Image 1 (cartoon, rainbow, N blue to C red):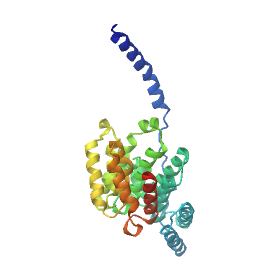
Image 2: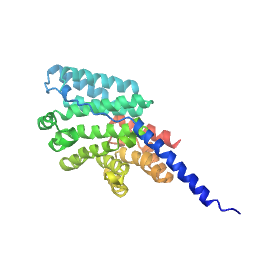
Image 3: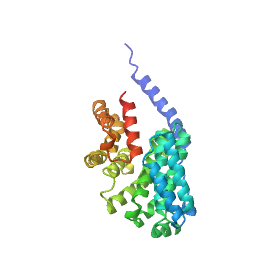
Image 4: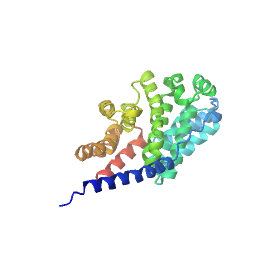
Length: 299
C-alpha cells in the first residue's frame, strides 16, 4: 500500500493557503456597526399637562400589549408623548424597550431587524443624555461607553436597553462576518453593564447578569471573554430571577444549546411555557413573548 501522507499533507496545506484570502474577504465584507451620535437630537425634559396625559395613555396601552397590533399602538402612543416632550426619559426608554420587542418578536428579515435594533439603541442613548454630566462628557469628545462613569442610577434602564438592543442585533441582525468585525462592540456594552453593577446592583432580577453572561461567553479570550465567567453569570441570573421568565428562557434558548445539552434546554423552556402569566414578574408584553416563544421551541 502506498504512503499518501506527504501528498495529503500538501493538499491540506494548499487548501489552507487558498482559504486564508477567502476568510479575510468574508471578514472585510461584514458590515461595520456604525455609531451615529444621537446627541444632536437630545432635548431638555419639559413636561406639560398634555405630555403627562399622553404618557399615561401610552403606559396603559403598553401594560396590555400582547400582539403586533397592540404593540404598535403602544409605540405610537409613546411617540406622541415624546413629540409633546422630546426630553421625556420614560418615553425614550420605553420606546427603546418596545422597539427591541418589535425587532425580535415580530420581524423576520435581518435588514429590518438591524434598522429596528439600531433605532432602539438610538432612543436609549437619547435617554442617557438626560444626565447633564454624561451629555457634557460626550460633547467634549468622549464616546458614550467611555463616559459611562458619568451616568447614575436614574439612567439604569437606558444603559440596559442600549446593551440589550446591541446584543439582539448581534444575535438576529448580523451574519457571521459582521459579528467577527464588530466583536469589540460587546466590550462597549460591558462598560454600561459594569456601571449598572456599580450603581444599581439589584436591578433587573437577573436580567443584568444574563446580559453579562452573553457578553463574556461571546467575547473571545483575547478580547476579555471567559466561558467560565459567562457560566457563573448565567447561574447568577437564574438564581436572582425568581419568578422572572427571562433568565430561564434565555438559558434554555441560547446557553444550553451552545453546550449541546438539549435535555436541560427543554427543561428550562418547558418551565417557561407552563408558567402562568400572572405568576411572572417580567413586563406583560415580554411575558407573553417568552411563553409563546418557549412553546414554539419545544414543539
